[in-house]
Image (tube, rainbow, N blue to C red; front, top):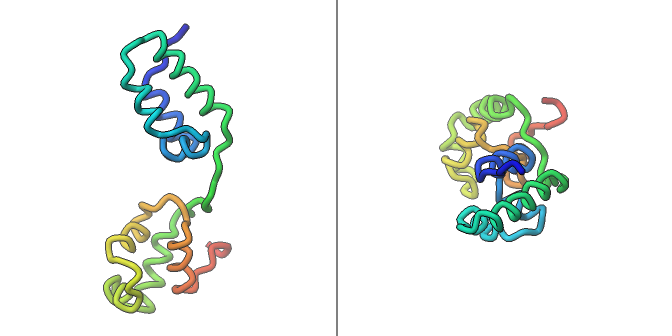
Length: 132
């Protein structure tokens, strides 16, 4: 039987679910239990747990709670924000709920999902996702 490594589990979970934590939530497994499995010393028991985790990754459906990020959305948001407010700081001053750092994550395409908060920014800037 082929040994399954910690990296194989992590990469498979990240590829299908986006993160190990998101996989744990989807599979209804405690994330701490997954990390405890990685630290186990008994190799036979550890391998059986690793195989169970890999099987769970293969059988669980990736639940997308939020919409996928659209390529180039950061540039669209940047141009709309600069047209309407001039700077990120001016936007954040007008809407204190949003911080400069968080807005810069959107502009640099570091957000992977369109969460409710991202959707609020899009609504403020009157950006329609269907037109991108």
